[in-house]
Length: 236
Image (cartoon, rainbow, N blue to C red; front, side):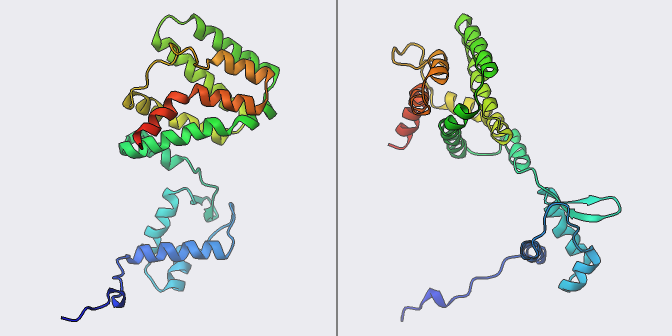
């Protein structure tokens, strides 16, 4: 029997009408350069222009509403908005619907973020923020339990994100806290305090006060080294 070429087969279009309307509207918003605050055509106008029912248009628009791309405004109808890019991600994380592999990958993102904000920290640090870090470090050094130390560890790193002055980074860091805990427990990271080479928060603070961005970046990587080593082992 002669071989046939599968390339001659045409993929079956599995998109629903609403899927197609959504894609068409997305392209329309892009081509017309809609900006936050701009009003979009009414449902009846969109339905007539696309030759579909208002019900189908309404369902497609509801998807944009869910994503925060459009919203209803009194006396203006539907308008384009500036969506909260983290809102849907936050919902997913709160429901704990992502699998272990994705959790580990998002954990890696947090490590990358910890390393990536260094230059911003040195641009925006000030005496007040350094004093707050000092207070956290002192409390951590006096802590009597692992629970207390973990609390101040979280506070220290959260303060670094706050010093960055970037509210988006701060929100992202807060969302990733549960993932950090999950992966840390899952890969059984040993206590780093017992390691003589471990870079403490006190050392990080001193480097932030007196060192350079490159020195701080090196110290931060050493501070997080056990996590990097465990992740490396997972892919070995």
